[in-house]
Length: 453
Image 1: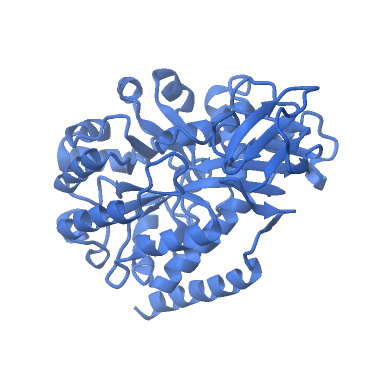
Image 2: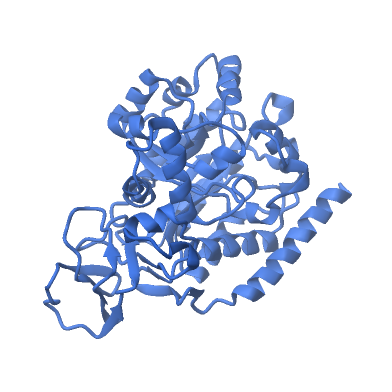
């Protein structure tokens, strides 16, 4: 790979206070120099990228998603419902997923994320009907093809409707099958080393879709193999009531009971915590992934980002599934997060810089990565570059603020692990239009299967 100087950006946010007005130098997959104002690189560069029209950020990190849901955007039977009813409408549809649909859904979501400036994504795939037992293997292949850095979570559901859970029985697996496959995936794909492109985490779907025994055993396996844990928690009041009725615990007490209250755990949504629980979560070093568009779409509530951070928790950002967003555009979530958090705390208490932090170093902490999320010497070369040349930016003054407040939707250049994956606003070596044609056909097929059942 060439020694590349990303030179003289219009604006740059590094995630720290280091002067980077002169740009950054990348060697291989690593940032080797951050250059201050009126300073030249100390190394000989092979390639120079003129960034004078670009806002440069660390690659955005998506800490929670469901890639397969790109196949059920704006699905008629799921419109205008809150979480539990929304899930009940969609579980029977998703039960029809096959391997081809899984691959296309993963590739489409990866493409959409990359085009929005996202360089690392965690996907939470928990629905594994008969015939889709190798769903995570498919995702590994697909995301490597797309060039997206990933933490793929081996999700699970084991508590069917007939046992007091939410998912239909034909969408769940036995606990032994779940644990055996979790161990296999860690053994075959997990890359814990610095710069790993594929990592595996373990992710029972939620307290209302798995048993207590599975939560405990998953925590045991994760501890033995030093992998992260992930689940949905405190997304709605219905979930809180479910935990109280079924387990006799509020959700955070339940989390502690099953051995999850520690710094290898991050949670999706995390809305309905009380003050005492926020202190406990912060003391444990828990990560919380804020999903603003999804939370607004399902009317779930507003995450308490500032209090969680003040307590010591990491707060990241996620698009959530494309059936509750209904997109996979991470830079759009910066705008949504800024505005919804201002509704909670006031406009003077939340800035666009907070959104940058949540979408980069905050999300990186969520997923247990110390090698991404900032532009500094020694960090991985995951970089997002945006132009402000669209009509919505005309008349803007502060480039960093404009990126969020004026509504950026698409990156101009994206580098992952030192390689350009997006140039001039288009994917490199990926036939986007061909992918869309196949993906749309798969979405129609899935809907047709659901109508027949």
